[in-house]
Image (cartoon, rainbow, N blue to C red; front, side):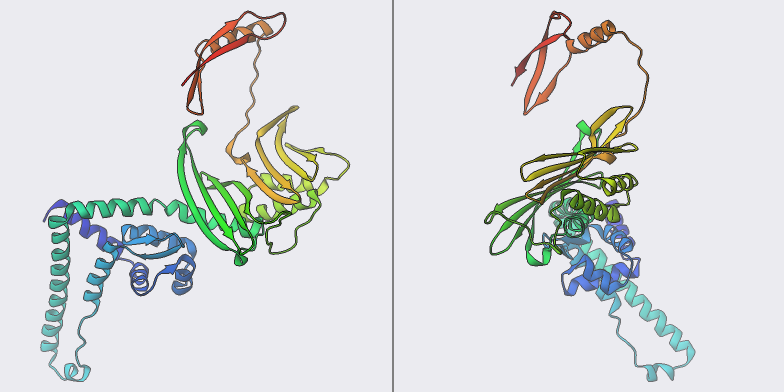
Length: 392
């Protein structure tokens, strides 16, 4: 038997070793099911179900509507499993009157038949698949692997709906919700952060909302809402009424976000918002600085890291309201670490370090390479002026 056949057997029998995984195959052979439906049927923790789904691997396919179904490999595997389980039952009374010697012989014979039938069935199926349709099977398995790379997305999709329902409090039962895209990218510019962006469409007969949610290293990072169709002024349909007081609304959002994420820094933010008042648009508590910017009917609430008199706006949680509607919630506080170091250089040394670094400095912007800087002499007490060339 070839090594590829041995690997195929090993993968199948390893996946079917646990009774819960066999039950999942039986359930999906009858009906497509969602993650929640399988949880209700199996009565096991969600983490256990996710583990079993990962082990089933290419036997399953997750559809765009969130339901799971058997792949072609899974259907064939279920057929083999079903054949092994449907062993003819012997008539109890006739069997009981036989001498124990014959009972042993018949039992051994029945077991041998089952093992022979199972082995023959598996060998026949995999031999044909690997011998006659090897290239086709390779394509199918590759497609299944690509689909099952979405195992990260399964958890992200669940987290995304939690943000939409429990934090933004949009009543998804009143909308037709469609996942438009799910893109995973390794961000080398952020130190290898795995970034996943999900885009949803929420529609009713009167309006259409576009929602974009971003996760970085499986941590929520961005919620963004935009009205595609509808009549302004427009409010999404909420689970409960939202406050028109910006500080109260921000405090409620942070508290709801804190209840699902449990990140320690949200405690300080919550305390700061609790103590905040309308009389001051800038307030500080520990290493958290609150800055509220109002422009007309819109407002920005920025909770950023501050230390030693310096503010780090990149390490922040940002809420943007438009006509009292949450348009954007961004959390990149978890993404950055702020360290401390002492640098003792003179002004002249600092300028020379900057001039040296600028000699070979370059970056990409919108597909164009910015490079080949020309350093001009310092005009008076100002820092060096740089003239750059853009290379398409």
